[in-house]
Image (cartoon, rainbow, N blue to C red; front, side, top):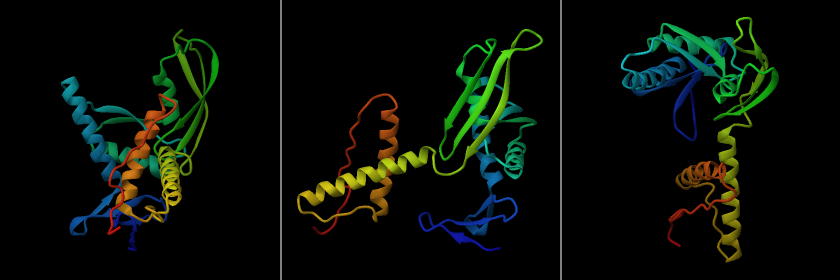
Length: 219
């Protein structure tokens, strides 16, 4: 078993060369698989649902990125079984986003649904109309996605990069040669603020980012 240590987090991981799925080495050298981690998340969601509904769900629809392969789908189903679910359906995220939107399915039309998630950008093309029983019908014509390069995290990083470059230029204008890009603690704060700024800009045209004590040294 060959483990690789993440320089940023210090976590040790191992990837299955056949499936590409990752496992983590935890305390006491315990191996935690991707399915186990996902099962913990599903269990928390089931706990919340049980507290709200008064009974624990035994079936669920789980959304997945549009480019999930067979191994990733099977790992998701395994996680659901580990969490105690008896029946599970997998649906692509942009397709479910369309279903959750709330428009009338009875009207015939073709709709393209883009979905920028946490780390992926997926697209589904769906057709709506009326089925044999007279009820609304949705058919997925095509779906696909990219796992890297255009997800929510990528937007956060671009905003963080802009903020740092902008501030460095301001410091240089007053004679301070200071760069915080190599300061892990400072960059974590900038990235958090970048995400908050992104959320704020979803509803308005401008926002302000203010961070105090971002860099401290003898000068």
